[in-house]
Image 1 (spheres, rainbow, N blue to C red):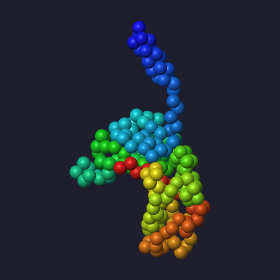
Image 2 (cartoon, helix red, strand yellow):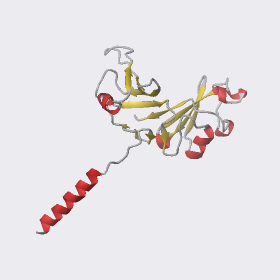
Image 3 (spheres, one colour):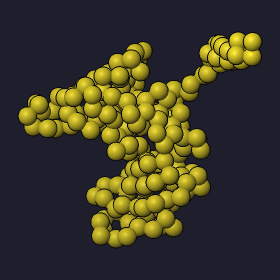
Image 4 (tube, rainbow, N blue to C red):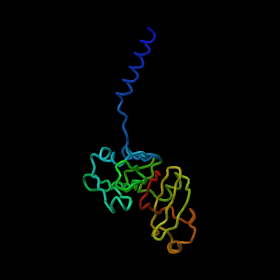
Length: 186
């Protein structure tokens, strides 16, 4: 008798939990996922995840060169959302290595998007590293495995041309805009 009551209660709990429709925010960025896209998603799963969007696969090489091929995701209206790089070229079971965020609707749990500024990033996260490149700087945030690219045109003139200069947080203007950002999963 006790087993049947326990079983009935267990079935009721399962049914109630299954009927709830948890709303997944398709534009929410976390350390290990972006909407339905996760750090374990395989290339073959992209058709299902982005079934309402357009997927464009670029073939830069062939199966013998080992080139990694980017996969771009567009809305049906033509707006580019994401650029995805798998860890293996031409392999449907390859997992996602990096995701470049291009659409401003994608936001982290601390409300950082491509519309954010350096001030927003600095206030929301601990900056792990700043890399000085030719035309941009890259702000790394280990907490969410992300890197934010800022065009050097956003920096004072004395910081734009010397690639060997170590750029500090205090030298970057609060108003410097994000060009794009990436999540790194491998």
